[in-house]
Image (cartoon, rainbow, N blue to C red; front, side):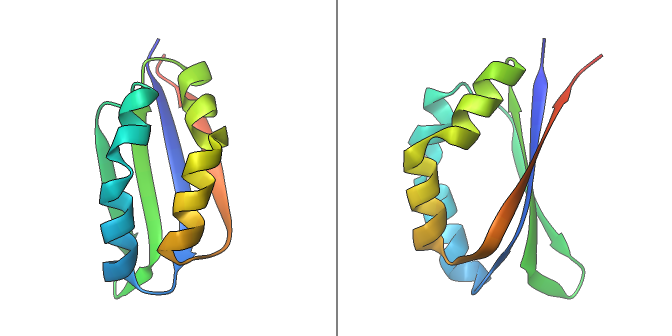
Length: 90
């Protein structure tokens, strides 16, 4: 079953965050991430909403809990606690 991970967080600087986000592709691939998309609130590119598709919820949860992801998020300038939500395709 396909799963979607939605993540919302604020970043100090979008351009700096995006460089680190792109460098995290091996982590996403390791957990089976397929499609991904990055959105922001209109007029505020520091309020970021990201979606990632995974083969199943367990893979999405493993990605979200990966310590390497936490390190990347911290180094990218994420401010505050990110909000993770998991959804299954029905």
